[in-house]
Amino acid sequence: MGPSVAYLQRLGVVGDPPDFGEPLRQIRIIDATERLLRAPETLFDSGDAGLEAFGWNFANIALAERFEAAAATLPNLITRSEAAEAVEITEDGGRLHLTGGEVVAAPLVVGADGRNSSVRAAAGIAVREHAFAQAALVCDLELSRPLLGQSVEFHYDNGPFTLVPAGERRANLVWIDTRDVLEAARVDAEGLAATLAARAQHLFGTVALKSPAFIFPLGTLSVARAGARGAVLIGEAAHAFPPIGAQGLNLGLRDVADLSEVLAGLDRGAADWAVTASTAYAQRRAGDLARTGTIVDTLFRSLLADMLPAQALRAGGLWALKLLPPLRRQAFALGMGAR
Image (cartoon, rainbow, N blue to C red):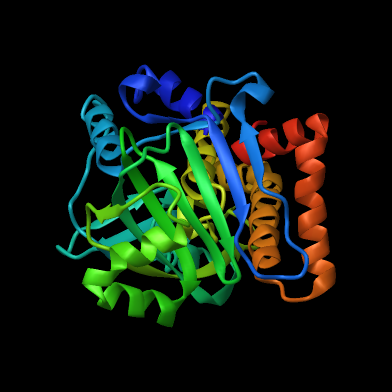
């Protein structure tokens, strides 16, 4: 999203976005359910917010290569290609026991080690998790008609079917449904493309798979605090939720930005600077993590709700966004993570 791209540009990781990714200029939402109360078809345009694009679709591999290139220029960065067998967080700092037998000690430990974070467990930070019956199927597609900078979300009873522009006639697919439906579709390799075209209501012609299809379970994860005792958590060690609104990576980048701000303002000559840093980081991230997690969880649950009042609220909300420009601009700002 826009603020994340600006941050990556300041770091020198990304240059001119059009040279690197595909712009996301419009978001089109189509209620494809068969419910009594359905939301209106809605088109959000970045021009309504005075923006060239809401965000940019960067390929994972290309972005990872940019991070690797930036890391190679840092003279004080040392990397070790080993796993941490055990992590200790004590009053004297952190100790990582590596698979090769080495023990690495540091005052501050940053846990970017995913949902099953060893750093989180060692720091004694409480975690809340919830698993959904739904899963997500992801793959790359080629369409016979291009998306032209428009992300299209078809909202079905068990979750959205989302096509994201990836350049020319290419698209990235995120299809959320129950796991048995997704597994059955993936097993039928010959029929999968036809199934996807039907899910897209044949708006983009024929569909061809350009990558294998992968299925991931869905759930939410949140922490009581994102830092404590000289340890901080970033990325999925601190937050995880369904892929709604492209929030995962963007929220992780805001984690990094806030940690950088905290460290830049500290006297690292003080004896307890790492504990101070972890406490300040947790306080700084609390509002953003709670707000984003609540919004994404509410949006996802509203898509799955069978009760008429919930369906009415969802449909009414989309009507309000469609008809009220000030509310729409506020929603844009929240969705992009503007601060």
